Image (cartoon, rainbow, N blue to C red; front, top):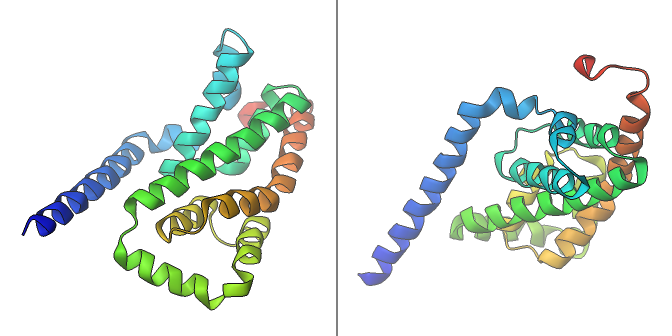
Length: 190
């Protein structure tokens, strides 16, 4: 009896958190999909608060699933010097991947864990390569993959490593593009 009550409380808390995130997205959707990273960075009094603001955006991005990744990568490239921008974006994707993985781990239940593991077991020898390819090719949305892998309790160390290796080339490319595009196209057109 006590076990059932505990499971019910756990389920209710998961539903409450998921609903809170959903309502937050509904209320703030327009602001989230049109977030101006450059404006936030320029409002920061120094480099450290600017970097922390961007990392907070990445954390929120990992939870709400609606902030466009390319927009953030390019905007960071526009807001910082090239080297700083690359480092901030790399740290940002690690924060984002961690946040969405942990959110998936929290939301995941026995049903998701059971079937998620079956999907991963189908590719037993290739699951690490699959994580890399899902990030490199990005057929699936980044944060949904993170949620799935978190809820499936995929090994976190491997998850971070292969996610980073798969996504880093694109992040670096978009960051450099953001640095160069600023010279030619005003932000309001982007």
